[in-house]
Length: 95
Image (tube, rainbow, N blue to C red; front, side, top):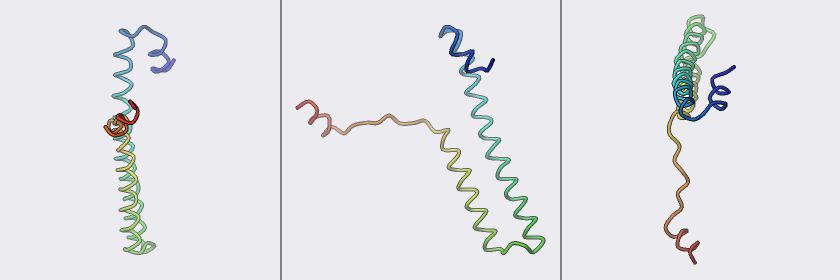
C-alpha cells in the first residue's frame, strides 16, 4: 500500500505525518532528479565534445537548454499563489 493511499484512508490526525513524509520524499526526489539530470547531460556533452563530435556552439546551446529545463522543473516546488481578483472586479461583482 502506498503512502498516499494510506494517508487518504486514515483519520486526519494520523495522516498528517504520513503526508508530510510523502512531501519531503517528493521534494528530495525532484532535487536529485534535477541534479543527476544535469550531471548526465553535461557528461554526455563533454564526452561528445572531447571526441570531436559536437560543435562547441551547439554544446553551449544544449547545456543552456538543459539547465533551463531543470530550472523550470524546479519551479514546481514553489508554492502556488491563489487566484486573486482585483478590487475593480470585486466592486463589479457586488454591483
